[in-house]
Length: 174
Image (cartoon, rainbow, N blue to C red; front, side, top):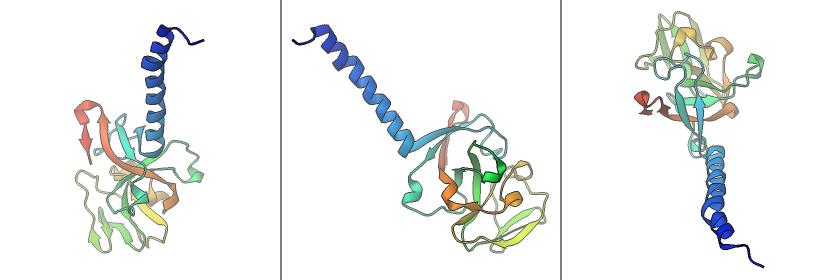
């Protein structure tokens, strides 16, 4: 015996599309793009507290992390945080990084980021090891980053931030 027409209609027109949409959304979030809410001012003014960003989760399967990329990553274990961090990649393997005279240097040249604070600390020079990254927040003096805990494992990277999508007034694609 077949179910009544109304039941078939509800299943076909409402339930199945809803289930498909949920499965598709979860699959996209797990493999392609994941949203994050930014909890701190460490990337201010580029990304501000409470901004919501989208992260490309598969880009680094096709290319290496580049200097200047804004990434989401799992923080080092000793920081005891289960909240992902967002920072800018300053040094990639083989780069020499130094912070002096309120300037960040990579391979002996100033590495300027529009709007980034001038650091009030001195660091390095250090050479970034293989499979590691050197990351800093754009809010250089108010960021827990590589200048405090050295290098980030490449394996900790979750993806590259490619967009601020909320609030709409700050909508921006990187």
